[in-house]
Length: 226
Image 1 (cartoon, rainbow, N blue to C red):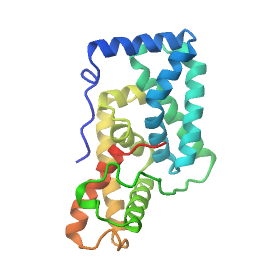
Image 2: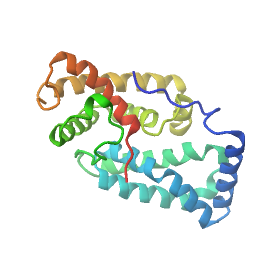
Image 3: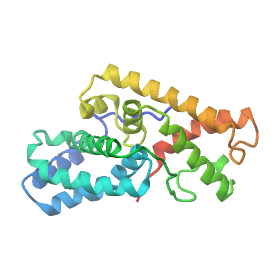
Image 4: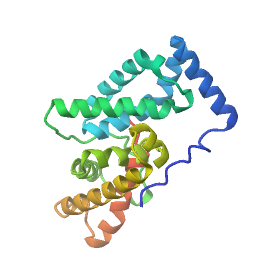
């Protein structure tokens, strides 16, 4: 099962939430220092989200820069400061979709910290096995349809609740639930098909696959980029 997304009503304390709104308000009024604070807070997560969306870490960073530039230019149009998260990820999503339409989709594995976010049972794997596993995750994710992949990554990488995803993408919560479920299933089937040819990762047959597949979704929810 994928990690549980955070509840938007408990994601920030009341004091932190008010401070966050004040920073957004200041940025909306043209305060570049306040916007830089928002950039520092969100940049790593936006980079990770976009890298997974387009399948390339460097392109993900470039698209993140484009996302923040557009956010700065359009910030005056934001009417509810408390919804900044959803608004920012909607911009990032649209930029990723436009980018994918402009080029033939391709994938390359993401460079990740050698030990970051790795469960104990994977920590003894050598460098080749770790690289093979990351490539396998990326290749499987590439098989997930774009609308399902978007919802799945918003839940696992952006840590959005289904309510927040619905707000960000302007779709119903029921649709989000369906898309996440179908995305998980498409990822599972793709990962299973690809894993049979990946000997470095699967040394113990079916038993190894049973425990590595949940880890694949876990890893998507713990990776950072940049």
